[in-house]
Length: 95
Image (cartoon, rainbow, N blue to C red; front, side, top):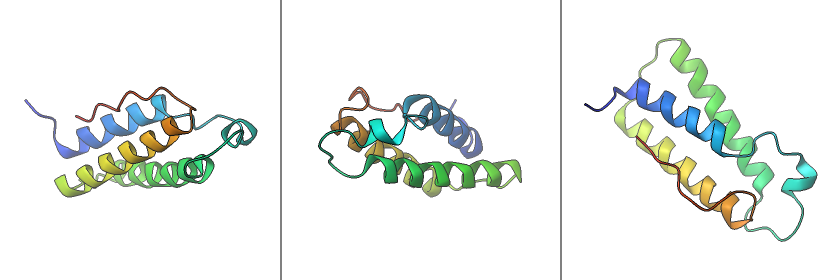
């Protein structure tokens, strides 16, 4: 059975928080050639995650479209961070 949209969003957030290097120092993020600014991408995604976490805590239920868009954003940012050599290139598994 598939999870409801709130559970799916929480699962995506949890996986993204453990997969992407949010705590990596800026000096490491910005060392070497870049394909997209890893620092700015992570800052953007962190803001999006914090917004969704607060919305979920307020018992707001995301639509399927919102979950899908968020998952797609996370996947694209994951690819960009991997292209910069900061993480392994395997994909985030979206519920």
